[in-house]
Image 1 (cartoon, rainbow, N blue to C red):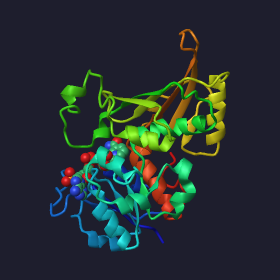
Image 2 (image 1 turned 45 degrees about the vertical axis):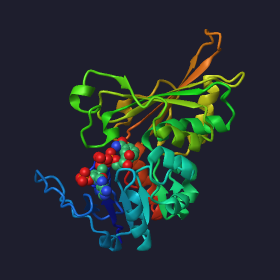
Image 3 (image 1 turned 90 degrees about the vertical axis):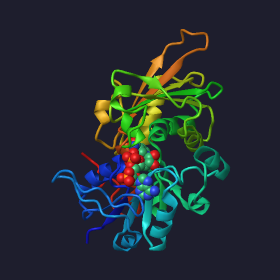
Image 4 (image 1 turned 180 degrees about the horizontal axis):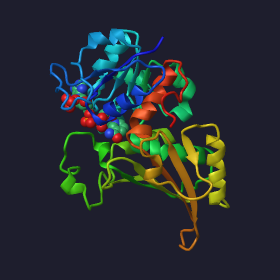
Length: 334
Ligand SMILES: NC(=O)c1ccc[n+]([C@@H]2O[C@H](COP(=O)([O-])OP(=O)(O)OC[C@H]3O[C@@H](n4cnc5c(N)ncnc54)[C@H](OP(=O)(O)O)[C@@H]3O)[C@@H](O)[C@H]2O)c1
């Protein structure tokens, strides 16, 4: 028998991406698409090809096996609580349950709507938490930038290949879809087209999430906005431990991800957005920067993901597959 899921926030970018992925998933019936805010009637489709969205009705959680929450931060707790009360598993794409430290969550995101849920949630970076996710009821889907930064750094830091006396510089660029569907001063066409800018320097909300996952605050994260719609390219500058070269970092990453279907470590060349757009891949390449400067050699690791897929809905589907005992890759391989 096929499974069924509900998507809350189905009119948004990540909700729509999930609906697209689920439409070709072999183990799911068409999802229950729910929008929008409580008490608000969803817009009727503007074309005959758009799916009809249903009014948000938490009673309908009874009809499904799992619930995706594609809502802005601060909104997820009541939906997660109700879905779990009905015995359903939940993947939340917002940041509501990602940070374990309550005080930190409060200072970054404001009011804490669900300390109990944050405590119960498993951080869903599948490649590093597969067993815990499979046993969980609630998964906090990782943020887009944190996914692009932590997937390449976790194995390399664990192997002691980086000298953390120097900060790791995470110089990251994202397409505008990372900001969601509602127009914002920074993301309207006139502000983005033919432009390039840094934002959130020193206070971006993803910095504490990166620090929590990597267990170090030695990562200096600087996000930029690209004049493209989808994709994140992260350029990670590392000072290597003595004697470590790019080949060692590449070998470490290849060993760590040898059996991972969604992490591709390059033997040569470097990732580009167009290699990962519309896919659930995280592509990783490594290069040496010779020791010309007095500060010594650097190694540059480049990773690329599609923020709407591996950085959001694809990873969320990977998590839901695990929660429901399905093959993790189902519906996600090209
Ligand atoms: N975009 C990305 O690349 C990305 C990556 C990783 C994580 N995320 C996170 O995923 C979540 C969704 O992102 P998005 O880009 O899809 O945002 P979005 O395009 O702005 O869509 C948000 C959706 O949530 C609905 N909504 C708003 N307030 C609600 C409420 N109180 N209750 C129920 N539904 C509500 C909206 O409905 P209306 O139709 O009424 O507006 C819309 O369907 C966010 O928390 C975001 O931070 C996004």
